[in-house]
Length: 97
Image 1 (cartoon, one colour):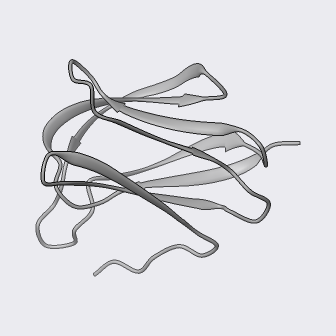
Image 2: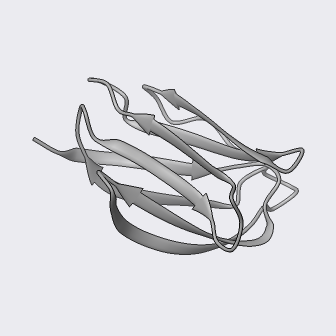
């Protein structure tokens, strides 16, 4: 069973293009630039469920991050800091100004 999962692309994106894959299949391509006022580049929604692996890749690089979703993980937070991607999950949407 799949549910909507929000991907929050946050700090450190400055014009990068990224590919999001779910369970090994490309789900979307995005152009990302972080708004300095909010710390948010983009929020996207994918359909995924527990056990599905979500992977974010910066196109044209070897930078990627991957996570196997657990039950209740409805938000995936992705940051690009010091030229590497980081990912953490949350059960609630983070607040933005």
